[in-house]
Image (tube, rainbow, N blue to C red; front, top):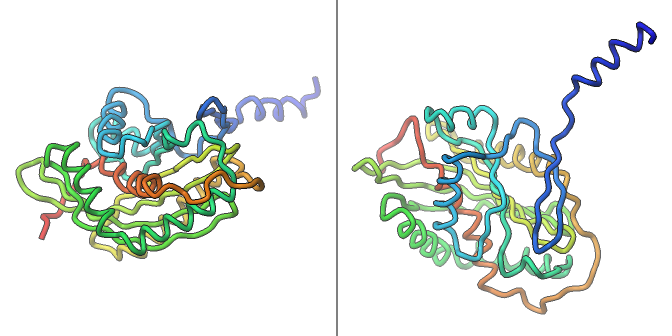
Length: 268
């Protein structure tokens, strides 16, 4: 073998390939790539987190997987830190067996925007009820700000929200802020919801942090390499309103599952 080829072959052997994974939604296998710098959430601590998130969300939501940054994962498993940046991939149980089309997706996009613009108080009230019930009153939602939605193509859109979380688990009431980006993606007729969360520094500009997080989070969705659908007629004449509310709520509540803080701020 040529001495010139040997170093090249060694480099190829040492190269780390993109990690491919598969989700099964309603009998359909959906391939995706694990984003760079993220690891799958596995083990008892994550099982506990997912169990709480499932109880705190509408029952129609089924969590498929959770990913955390490598740094957060190490601290979280060691019990020394929070999940400051993580994502949850989920589906709606009522839609798993359906084969939706971009026309349906367009209805969902418009309906989500309407809910955020016109039914904020209803969303917050229902979210508070779910969180209070799941946490036995230890956690709460102090407020939320919908910061708008953006189209990323005919079968993908995302919405950004900043939430105020309340933690009463230590006998006092503490508040924290979190940015949440919910992305809806239609692929192979299946609707995925990708919810990403990042804890915000309350001593810095919250909305600047949220905007930076949004840019980074959209890049992470790109790295999943899930191709969106591009054509087809619609299934629903009007997208069911309850499913829309569930979609919005599912994107807000999941982040409360990781309320473990190194530094807390007393609620005012």
